[in-house]
Image 1 (tube, one colour):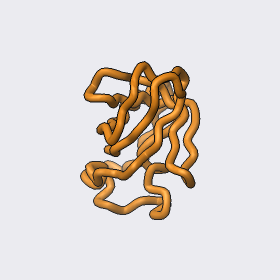
Image 2 (cartoon, helix red, strand yellow; image 1 turned 30 degrees about the vertical axis):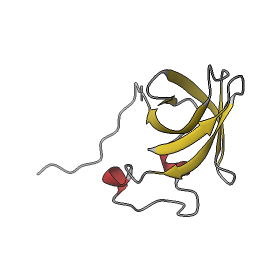
Image 3 (cartoon, one colour; image 1 turned 30 degrees about the horizontal axis):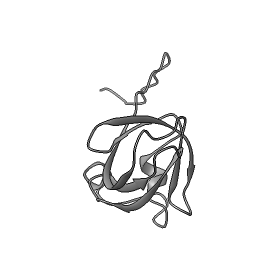
Length: 101
C-alpha cells in the first residue's frame, strides 16, 4: 500500500510514497486526489510493516503531512519499509437496496 519510515520509540510513521496497489480496488480514482491516503487508511485500522514484524493500530492520521499516529511506539526503526492496511468491519444492521424482479 505504501512505503513508510519510522524510528524506535516513536508512535508515528511517515508515509514516503504510495505503491498504487490500492488502485485495484478503486481503479485509481480517489475521493480526495491530493490526499489518497484518506480513502485507504482510517483510525482503528491495523497496519503491518517492517517486513511483517510489526502490527500496530492507527490512532490518528495527518493527511496533509503524510503521517500516521499509532496507539503504541515502534519496536525498531523502519526505513522505506512496505506498509499494508487491515480493516475488520463488524455490523449488526445491513441494508440492501436492490430491486429484484
